Length: 188
Image (cartoon, rainbow, N blue to C red; front, side, top):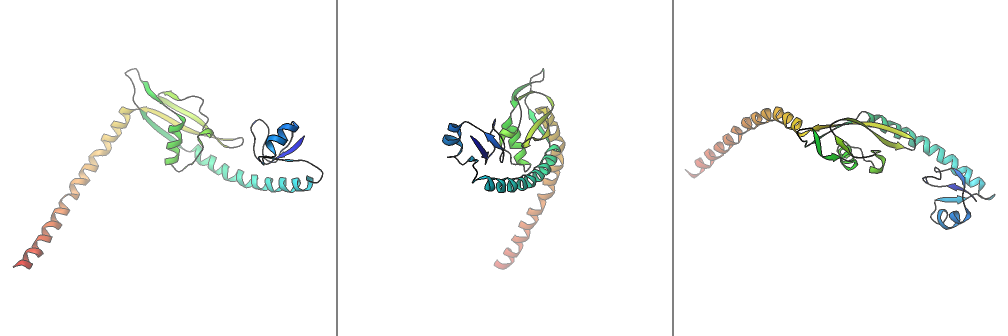
């Protein structure tokens, strides 16, 4: 039985494709769930119109996803993990970690689109592919460093912050003393 797919169905085809499937599969699964439309002589014109509309929609989607792929390919994520003396990781960097880091940078992706075959369990730099649109893929760079590197960077950043706090501390004291003087003059 020939049907036109209304949605992308894995191992069957993409939206708009006309495929040949078993009649029971079409009648009992695809058509009742509105995943496909039966190809009949009366439906041919409607199917052609839907395919034209789908092609236009796919072209627009493709251009937006290509922009997203370009932005993603410029992303570099850095993860700090505890390591042993031999630089073996305690734990790993998983798909969920990558997804959360991407969300913090403004990318909302389904974690199934992050194509990491297994969690990263060693220090180093990795290229992680991300499925953006059908066959479009982007690669992000993931770097895994020991926690000591994060502590060293934090120490470099902390001294200026402490100096800034010291500079801010005298200002509130001056305002408190200036508030006491008008209050004291009112009671006299």
